Length: 204
View 1 (cartoon, one colour):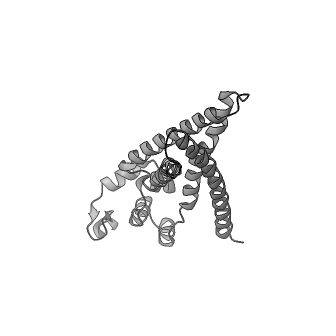
View 2 (cartoon, rainbow, N blue to C red; view 1 turned 120 degrees about the vertical axis):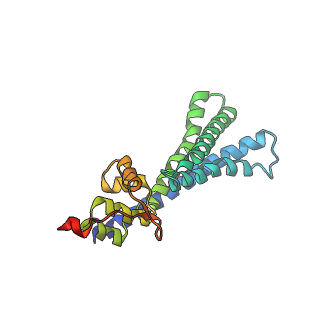
View 3 (spheres, helix red, strand yellow; view 1 turned 90 degrees about the horizontal axis):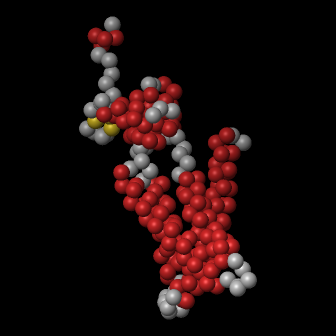
């Protein structure tokens, strides 16, 4: 089995495992939050919607954080993610304190109840990262073996890679990638930096 196929199978197995764990964590959190909503006066027919809203924001925000990695707009999904996670953990802990048996210490019940939403947060993020593991484009792979780092960066930018991701791929600092693009005009047809090539006189 080639390294590529072995890596693909490993990723597929990891994704399957994380999805299974995320489903369990979501279900535990869902039942606790739905019960808390019902105890708080929300009708039994609507109580199920509250955990979907709270934990759903965690899932959607996590996907958005990964999708917008390196972009200026990433602060907004990060804010939503932090807020939803705080609400979910707090609500699960409150429900545990309210619903736990009298002989169970409150701090223990709260700690146990906080695990599912925290696992949901962590495992959702891991699942998205596994799915988004980059497979280097064939053209970019050939380019990086035959051209300069600047030209490799141009090829990766053409494939939609962010400066931060390009920097990791080429093992340079993100500011270096930023200078490469800032010091070179954009190719108007492709909207990517057109790195200057030496004139014939300079090659003599």
